[in-house]
Structure formats: structure tokens, C-alpha cells
Amino acid sequence: MTKVCVYCGLSSGKNPIYLEQAKILAQVMVQRNFTLIYGGAKIGLMGAIADVILEQGGSVIGVIPKYISLKFPEMVHSGLTKLHVVESMHERKALMFDLADIFIALPGGLGTIEEILEVFTWSKMGIHNKPCGLLNTLGYYNDLLSFFDRCVNEQFLKPEHRSILVVEEDILRLFEKLS
Image 1 (cartoon, rainbow, N blue to C red):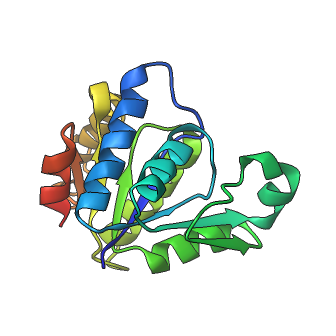
Image 2: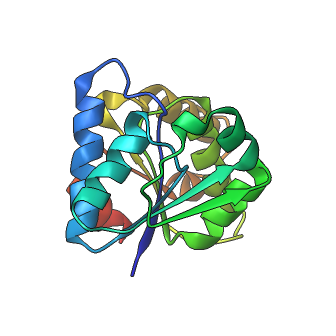
Image 3: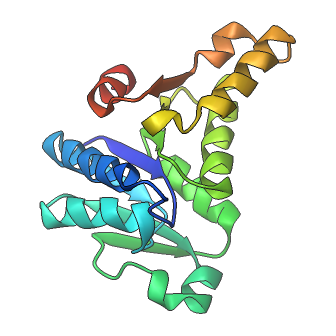
């Protein structure tokens, strides 16, 4: 069974399409019998994806640092297939990496960007060859992609490394390219 790590916001965002796309992504994951690996929250895009997958009988594995679960217990999703409580964000990211076969980032904030960039960088360095992708809903990541293109133009990033990160606005095309 393929395990997909999804990085996304603890918020649902300003535009309702972000939430709508997150729910569609969850439905596609259930149809393909994919397991969700994610940050363990029950709010925002994170919670929405987990809820849809669980409601449709899918499998969801959450990974959350202990200090977040203690400080914000109301954020922790209690109905998951499995919840790993780890000591730190470093352990969280390492376990999510170990569990996942594919990485996808939906719209989100600094944590989302930091997490997808880390696995993208690891792939560039040859640490793994697991597919990495961005769901670029409403062009959310266009500015980041422009930065990557600038890195290539300024010769700080090789074009073949830039192409490691798969970018799509359509969920089905994204999964086709990542699977």
C-alpha cells in the first residue's frame, strides 16, 4: 500500500477552494487505497483531509510532537488509524519521511514550505528518490516556483534538480506524475 505524506496548513486558508481541493485529494487517496501520513491535527486542511479519508474507510497515520499534543490537546485528531507522539519536530519529520513513499504539499504556511523543501533538498542530494510534489491550487506556489527558476538562472540550482519537484494544479495529473 502506498503511503502519501501530505504537508498542508493548520488553517483552511482564505479561499474555500483550498479546503475543497484538500477534500478531493483525500477522496482520490481513498480511491487509490493510499494511506495518509500527516501532522496529526484535526483542524484546517490537515483535519479535513484526515476526516474525509477516515469517513470513507481509509487509513490515516498522524505524527505529532509531544509538546504540541500537551500544549494544544484540542488540536490533536483522536480518531486516527494510528497516532505517533514523538519528542520533537526533528523526530516528527524523520518518522514521516521513513513512513512515506510520496510527498505532497498543499497550500500552507512556513511549516508546510519548510517540510516540502527539506524532502526536496534530500532528493536533490541523493538521500532518497521518493517523489515530491506541489498541488499548486490557484497558483499558490507561483512565487516560490519563480524563486526556484531564479536559482536555476543564477546557477545555484541545476535544471535537473529543479525538475525533481513535480508541480500541478490538477490532483489527478499530480498523482499520475508522482505514482
